[in-house]
Length: 617
Image 1 (tube, helix red, strand yellow):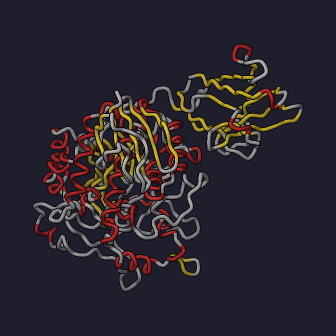
Image 2 (image 1 turned 30 degrees about the vertical axis):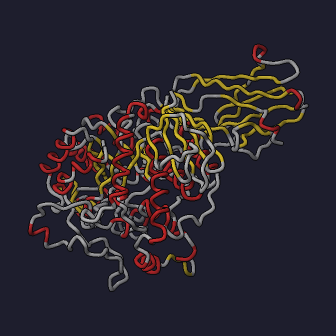
């Protein structure tokens, strides 16, 4: 029984410990006689009402005779974490459960709806102001740019225009060992280009000594990879970026090391081992990525050494596979980065930050997370026109993430782990999955490799997948203009939603590519798609001009969303997006556009597949 959305629940979904949660339940009187109203509060993994049962009181002051009755309750929380709740009432003498209808977040008389959600964070949770309102650029170091590479290192590389190596070796193994020689000096040489994009944060993939091109398999935590540079050069990059107002974030791989790390033989007790065979366990069963024993005192000593060495060489750190690391490790990492004066720490988190009861945003672990959920929501909207899933994810993130964490969480629509943005937008197989409210927290728009086409007898055929990628490693000419329109629309959303837009360097140049290794190819500095680059420069300038507005996520409000159309505002800035192939009949003729992705026709309507930001004061 849906009750036409007349059962209403009001409360603050995100609040600090020590604050009072106030909940109001509004019941239409024509449903019948209501009594014994209880709020059933649950923690992750608990039965309904497992944490508390709160008696709700009839509110005589907030009721209208013969129309509705209001029941209120309040309680304080002294422990951070994610909760859910529903209501149990007696309706006409029958015990009844009230849950939520996800379409309008109103109550329904059914146990089969959704529970209302609540997130409590530590009262002293603060995040740095410097990243807020800014723009991030992720740099995959090996293929960004190379400059003044030492001759002994140059001999290990291939020419910049060499096609990526994707075939297995004679034993059927796939390797990441074709080096292009991207280095720190190459990044320094391109600082002016980063400034032209109005980038305020540069995030580097790992720079420690490693055996692979991606360097997520660290061989030596005390040394910068010789091909990349050295500690002095890293410090120089940090200083030069800071001089022009750009923060530097380093990628720390603390969950596992590389198979060639000296720690494996010097301190074998630092690694998890199989109880039967005694062999070192590989993270996710990758034998080249031996996983650290997170309870080893030597592991914690290593953490301290890493944070101490990175201090004064960066402004922030990103923790690789943070969603696979225990909360107690993340709390220790947070203590160490504060101790050594590192301002900013984010983590690789693919699902909603509170899923599985995790404490990423409790206030004593991370400042923010890689907001892949919101990136997915943008793609489902921009490509498939899915306004409902977009609204569902956006509301969930904006309601539950602490505002201070949301403001510093970068929004990724592509990265070194996903297909390139242009590929996501117009590539084959990119919208073959039915997204629902139930799976949108774990399903990714770019999960192309989960399609049954690549699977044979229950096993994934890597060669078939990579061969197909290699044969389709180009932007189809008939998709060129569509890709440009969709990219502008998606990036507009990325730059004007709560959080920090994150460019995967190369997306601004029109780089195409499905998954690893095709998404990591060298950047085409001599053949940049200037139209796309100029768009990123233009929207970067717009965001920079209104940085203080976008920095305060309390300013954000979703106004409308239906049928491929969205409207949301920030103080005096109204953003309108039209994903459809027809003009949106919203007359904006007498408004002041401060940014637009397409020219406005004489009728003043929002053009197809476009977005406009208006100053409505």
